[in-house]
Length: 381
Ligand code: COI
Image (cartoon, rainbow, N blue to C red; front, side, top):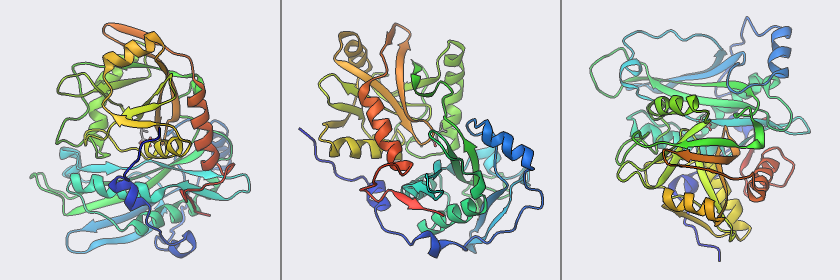
């Protein structure tokens, strides 16, 4: 039996209509790069798509000051930033970011997925980090103007996209600890292929004990650099053992699953129901997580957002009660987890049918191969 779901604050905010790109375009006027990529470099980058390694010719920018608010909007040449060593972000990590993608559809048009969700989450993260919030339509306009300027960098084909990285940070020159009075916002983009080079074959995950990415009352639900920095050392140790990512447990009892370094998790039970760790304020409220819950619920699947005990999960994987486990996120999309291991267990699972189906359903909407009944897709160009 399908459970009822009350939309979260982010889901409710992201459902508010916004103006089409034709009306938002031009808020960030273009200053064209005098040194765009050569034809050779462009061909090389677009024919060897990796994840997040190469960037396009331009970037969007605006600056906030305590007295003036957000101003100086523009799309400018991509290049190194000039930052004073006294910029407070370098000392206190007052910085938040987002991740979303621009997809090229078969007819050549360019779309993005739920940009208002990312706008709402950026504002949520900004509030937690004492950074300024921004107008949702300004956020979307920054994507529109940037992507239109660098449209040729949006690749075509399954598993490819222009990965968009909006971010803002405290640039005030001040080493006293206080919220910055000067903040810079940028959008950069990277023509990308799959996040995991192994593709859809599945990834091995190490469940870490003794290290946590966030705790109650901390910044776990904000998309801030510090959370990712905290995940790197355990992640490195797991990589040395041959694992692609770590799974973090709750910091009180080290008993319940939270999330991977930068992705949410789902568990598919043999009875067809699906479970995902509940939103406790410690994990990130992923846009892909939210979309998957919605798609599954609309198929009549019983999706339970609840605490998932590691012991029960491992026992279920061994007994067959758990059929599939997968990770999801903007970058990772839907990635099967085919091995879960920790200090005293090591369990394997095949890539499952439900994981394949939800990946197909989601990417069909994102790539324009299936109708979008939710109004999630936003046409950029
Ligand atoms: C994303 O999925 O967009 C993220 O920001 C996560 C990161 C691991 C790339």
